[in-house]
Amino acid sequence: HILDTETVTKRMDEITRRLARASLAPVKRLLYVDIMNFSTSFFQINDHWSFRDASKKVEDFVRHAKNANFELKVFIDAFAETEEAIKKWKQRREIEVRDGVRRLPQGMNSLLGDLFKRCRVEVCYSTEADNDDTLASHAHHDGASVLSQDRDFLRYNGRRYDIFIDFHVDKNKLVLKPRRDMRCFASQRDIITPAPAYTNRDPGMVSLSRHIYLRGTPSPLTHYFTNTHIVVRPLRQAYYSHLGLKSSVLETFPLFDGQVRWDETLVPPDDSKKGLLGDPNKAYEHFFKDMKRPQGVSDRDWSNHVYATYAVVFELCGLYMGVPLYDLLVAHAVHP
Image (cartoon, rainbow, N blue to C red; front, top):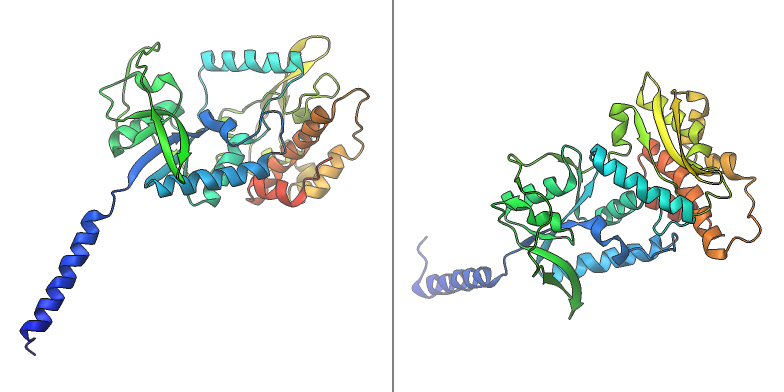
């Protein structure tokens, strides 16, 4: 079958137009985000029930990034910290307990991961190395830019990524603010090669591999109530049993009895409350049905305390059931 000259010309013109359109199509730009650095861009400070608003803000962020032709990856730290980092972390938690404050909601790491996954963004939990090391290495090797306010991204020798420290929206597109101040106060280090592994699934209690469970206080009302992590300990013991742990876990939480102190308890696996893990409402009722508001507590602090009680129960139930914390909060948590 021989095509006539006119048909050949038309087909060649169509091929030329397609190639022209392809060459004009903008190239996707990779943007790797240190998302916990921007938690207050999505969650309202001192309003722990703002997770519904956070959902809309994450959707908007992803849409504006897509309009600007960015392809996002979000990185979240799930690495067992160094002793120095743990010391600094404990000092911050002690201030929270002493002052009776909790600015941001319990489970925010999980919530942000859940919300970005709902928007089909790849969420990378850094489990093999520190989150900065992991993000920097992948950005370096993949030719991505970094969105983070952390100066530590300046420390890496021979880095091949641009650093942006903030963002705003203009005409429905994400606009990034580049880092201008290049002073680095951290010791220099090399990019890790090959890039450290990460997982796309929330690892939950990553420190359990070392039989350690260290947390702060989920609630601003530690002066009035026992740390809510301790209240739900039997549920956590059931989860330890579900995981197949054979020996006790060293649980460490801050308490307040006139001053801040750290409670350290060896907690064995125990499946006696296993039936509650698959029933979030029943589990919540079991541990908090008799909870009463103390006199003199502000509406805001009481509201945030109630959120904390839901979060510590639903985190465990969600891990057991394979259901995101966000979904359980939306379905079952009742604002006071």
